[in-house]
Every structure is written in structure tokens, then in C-alpha cells.
Amino acid sequence: MKNVYKKLFLLNRSLLGVDNNNALEIINSQIPLKIYKFKSGQPCFDWTIPKEWKLKKAVLKDLNNNIIINAEENILYVLNYSDSFSGVVTKDELVKHIHSNPELPDSIPYRTSYYNKSWGFCFPHNRLSELTDDKYFVDIVTEFNDGYLNIGEATIKGKSEKTVVLSSYICHPHQANDGLSGVILLLYLYKMLAKEKKLKYTYKFYFTPETIGTITLLSNKIIDPAKIEYALISTCVGYGDIFNYKRTFLNNHSIDNVVEQVLQKQNSLLVDYSPFGSDERQYSSPKIEIPCASLMRTPYCLFKEYHTSFDNLDFISIDLIKKTSYIYREIILLYENKPKLISNTNGCEPLL
Ligand code: ZN
Image (cartoon, rainbow, N blue to C red; front, side, top):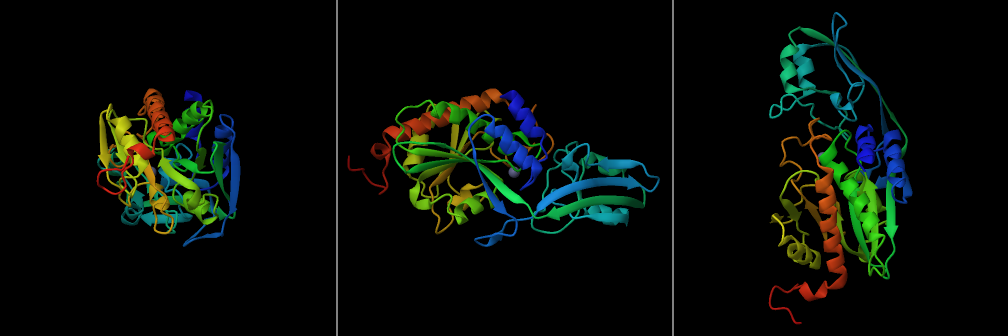
């Protein structure tokens, strides 16, 4: 699995594009995937499927032609979905287009501008002091072409049409814990659940760009809320000793109770739903109302390496991901066997 992780990590993934398709190919080499394709420009609720972003080059030079930054070395150096810009700019103008992270000054931040046209570089904060000239040459060449937003779906059929959704996101390039650790966990989990006989529920695993991918699945009725028992978002499972469970918006759905029961034996923190985070936001939206939770270790925003080049393969532990996949399995199998017994939706003594 380490090899798979490395291959996925190194791809220049984004919302759509060749490396997203390559990522789905790699996942498909591990578990059987059905691929859904959605064309750029297609409306999905309030949103529109974006164009494919192609980076031709992103180079920052001084006026003596010395290269300061070249995104060929690392795609994080350029704002993801950056617009093209070529020309000489003053240092003051340039600095307005540089993103840096003073908290982790040697890291390259990971920043996107999917829906606002803008150009920019992402720079280690400590290197800003190197910019001592008055003027610089910026050469960013990008293309926005019609393409396809591709989503992978793996299915384990159960007796019932009632479905459990297990989802993670593939859009973060060169980020190991945020997104990719969840993908790796789902690969472990699929392989374990596929061996189970007589599953009650059907299990659907989704590998999608975050936000727009899930919105696309819901808008195109690939996921029908009426058929969903519950959903779990798998991300940030490769770092940290403490489990962090973000409850469903219902707060006391059976899945919340089952997870709570399983985590009693673990060092864990249970937090209420909030409309901030990952794709649980889309599933929990009014009119969708799928009970969706997220079981993580140290979650996004709570580790300082988050959205920087330091969220890399050295930062995460495959062993922790594997151990977390066993917890997911335990939760899923417990839910299969006795959800109603431990559910109490009225807030008073349950009628047993
Ligand atoms: Zn993220």
C-alpha cells in the first residue's frame, strides 16, 4: 500500500484533469471502480462543473533571468487554478500575489482559487526576505479547457438497497493526511468488507474531488438521499493518537451512538456537527439531509502542517491508517447488527 500511496501523492491532482484520471486508475488497480464522467459547464444545483486547469509553466525570475521559483519542481509553488500572467511587476505588486505561511515558515502553502480568477505563487515565508529587488518577471501560463469531472465508485452489494456511503477526496495534490489518508483507509476498508458474508446494507465508496464532486453526485441523483442509511467522510486518519469524531447533524442518529460505543475503548474526542469541514456539509444540506459524520484522527486545521508541503509522506503513518480502518470496520459491523437497540431518537428512555 505504501507504493500506491506514493504514486497517488506525487500526482498533480486538482478538480479535474489527467492526473485525477490517473489517480482513479491507480485506485481501480486496487479495487473495482465504476467511473462517472460529468462535462465542464454542466450546472449542478447552484454550481457549475468547472473547466480543466492545465499548468504549462509558472516561473518567477529576477530581471537578470535568475529563477527564484519554478512550479516544475513542485506544483504547490503555484496557486491551484491560477490564471495566466506574464510581465514585469514591482515587488509590492508581486507580494500581493504571494501566499505564505508564517506559522510554518519553511513550508510551501497549498492554496487554490477555483472560482475566483486570480494569479499567484505560494512561497515559503522564510524566502520572502530573498526578494530584495524592485522588480521581478512573472511567467505563469495556464489553460482552462472543457473536460470531464470524473468520480470513482466502488460497490459492495448487501441484501438491502439501503446504502451506506463512504467517501474521500482526491483533489489535494502533494497532501498526505488531508484527503489521501482517507482514500488509503477506504482501500483497506473495501478489501476487508468485501470478505464479509451476508452484509445487510449495500456499501458505496466514492473517490471524488471535494465539494464539487459530492455536489455533482447529489445533483445527478447518483446518490439518492432516500436510499442512504448514513454516510461517513474519511480523511485526516494518518496522524495523531486521539480519534476525533464529528457527529451527524442529527446528533443522536444510530451511527453516532454506535461510534460513541466503539470509541469508548479509545482515546477520543466527540464533537458536534458544524457546517465547516469537508463533504459532510454537502450531505447534511437542507433538502439533502443525509446523516453524515466524519471519523478522523487529528482533523484538518488542527495540525500545523495542514495545507502545506509538510503534510507529506513522512508526516503520516500507514500503520495509523490501517488501525483506523479496523475501527471503521468495527463501527460498520456493529451498526449492521444492532442499530435500533442503541438508538434513542426521542431523548428520553428508549422503548426496548
Ligand atoms: Zn484540505
